[in-house]
Each structure stands twice: as structure tokens, then as C-alpha cells.
Image (cartoon, rainbow over all chains, first blue to last red; front, side):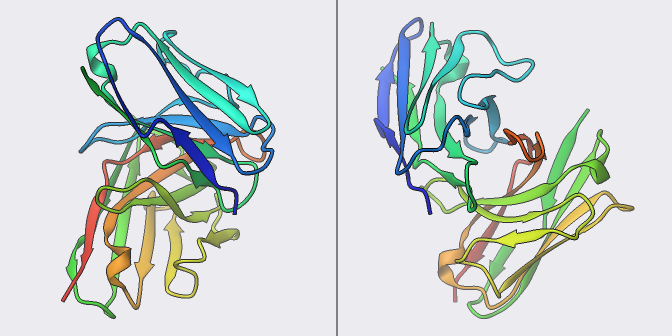
Length: 107
Length: 121
């Protein structure tokens, strides 16, 4: 199975900050990388697919980049509603695997 | 409004069975592959199972293979997960999710809010 490792595991930030989360795959996955946001008690929400594409309705302050083994999710101008846990997911090979998550909380 | 609603979770003893359901609404359920993903308390997300749009194609995580069975009823717009021989390590929130993208860059574009399964004596 492909292992996905996120860093950091948690971070504290303020509204308006620029936040970057990284995700590293244990082998090359091309651009088969998705990012999700999850808040407790709610349904997870997709933010980025294919490493850098935003689904309709996702705010433009979210962006994704990377290919191969190294990827990142950037939030440009953190909003109060962005405090959540973020997960990367590889869909290059089965089983699809997720990173362990990065919790973004208020500084 | 597109929606997925899970049900059927609860407290169950080790070795017993439980059946989860997921009711879909607001989209053409029979056009899409569906997934079950779980999250143990305090831990990350884990893919559990997949079923193709017509039920012919299925796959399972090694951790549940031989114990869990995924199925769907397109007429009822419902997804199911039959869980047998449950273990304490199966304790988790279970989410159903809808795939979009097919064989290319697929992703899960709609998720339910989850149902909690607790396996304990």
C-alpha cells in the first residue's frame, strides 16, 4: 500500500494567515492526489482534486500543487470557517489511502 | 439538495454483526460508484470498501476482507455495508461517499455525516 505522510500534524494560525500543509507519498503517484476538509460532526468536503484542480464552489483561497511524491495545500488568507482537519488522499492505486490529517486551530 | 444519510450504527459485542445503510437523494444514484470510509475515534480516515454503479465491481480493504460485504439497491437509492465478525478495532465513524471522475482523476465529492459503530463487550 502507498503510505501518505502529512506535515505538520497540527498547527496554530490566525485569521488572515497563509497556511501550507504538505503531503508526501511513499512512491510516485503522478497527480492522483486529493485534499479534503473535515470538521467534527460534519461531512468531509473535497477541496482539491488531481493535485491542483478546485471543484466548483470551493473558494479560490484554497490551492494545491505538486506531482510525483510531494504535494501541498495552501490557504491564502485563513478564514474563521477554515479551522478544521485536512486530509490528503491518493487515488493512484488501490487501496486508496489517506494521510493522517493536519489539524488547523486558532492561535 | 444532494444528500447522503447513514444509519444503522450502534453498540455491538465483538463477534456480532451489524448492517449499515446509506440513503441517497438529490442526484442520479445509479450513475455513480459509492464508497464506505471510516474514521476510528481520534484517528484519520481509512477507505473500507467500493462498489461500482451497477454493483458488479467491488473491492475491500484487507482489514475487512471476508468479514464485510458492500451492496446497493439502485431502485431504493441506497448503499449498504454488512459487517460480520466485528472486532474492537472496527470501532469508528462510518461514512458513505459518492465518487466522481470515473477511471481518471476520481475523488469523493459528496459525503454523509457518518454513523458511529462501537464494538465492545
